[in-house]
Amino acid sequence: MHSQIIDTIKQAETIIIHRHVRPDPDAYGSQLGLKALLEQAYPEKRILAAGTHEPTMDFMAGPDKVEDTDFEGALVIVTDTANQERVDDQRYKNGSGLIKIDHHPNDDPYGDITLVDTGASSASEMIFELYTYGAEHAGWKLTEKAARFLYAGIVGDTGRFIYPSTTQRTFEVASELIRFDFDREELYDGMYEKERNLLNLQGYIYQEFQLEENGAAYIRIPSSVLKKFNVTPSETSLLVSSLGDVKGMRAWVMFIEEETEIRVRFRSKGPIINTLAKEYGGGGHPLAAGASVHSWDEADVIVEKLIALCDND
Ligand SMILES: [Mn+2]
Image (cartoon, rainbow, N blue to C red):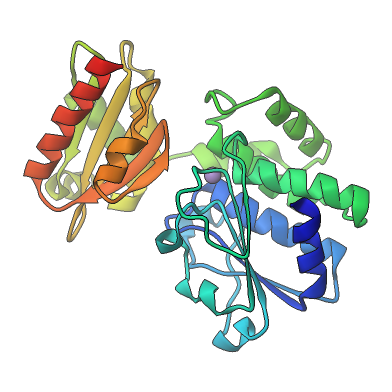
């Protein structure tokens, strides 16, 4: 599979790399890490990173301006994105070839070539494996820039190396990446420093969440609360994992009221919750998933189902 991907890359003159909407460090890390690797290996090719600009990710880098005409004859590579609806910039279909590189369950195996490894900690770790193959067979070289992106992606998706997805291989890859002397502290500040208003909302969440005896927990964040703390719905994604620190916690759900829907974010320390997310048109990993509903009544039903899930686990 790696050789097939590299052969396809070699044949393309323009390569456009996409990632998912609401990007996290792994979306950026895998996308921009691959871009940096390709720029180093193939300076004669045009390598573009697509997607909407996300200001909170400026510490990593920004996307490129991609014109409609750029897609003519281009090879498109999508990283870290399980299903096609979540691809940021739906023009990804307009290329002449499509490759999917991802570590989520392969429910939507789009692309002419699909490289999925659910055992990888992150898409960034998968890009490192591609680089390893490229280094051996196609003269690819790791640069400081690429190493910084891939490292950020791995740190982000492993929750700083604490999630169960972290393997011995993950640490080996990380140890290769930190041979480069990019500023790790600056990177961590970009990833983990939070505005005070967001931390105030985190305090509210810790005050108000409900925890059942069986370890199921939930918190509703209506738009009035978001307004009070001056936090946007998308910023709340930075707070979802915080409930994992609560003793006795097994699986939790956070409801965030947006303009036209209620965003549902699930996390778990054991019970499989992406099945529940899928019931509501969402998806994700077995222990980290999301969906959307349109009423608080639906949210209440989800709470009941989550409690039942924890009962049966
Ligand atoms: Mn990822």
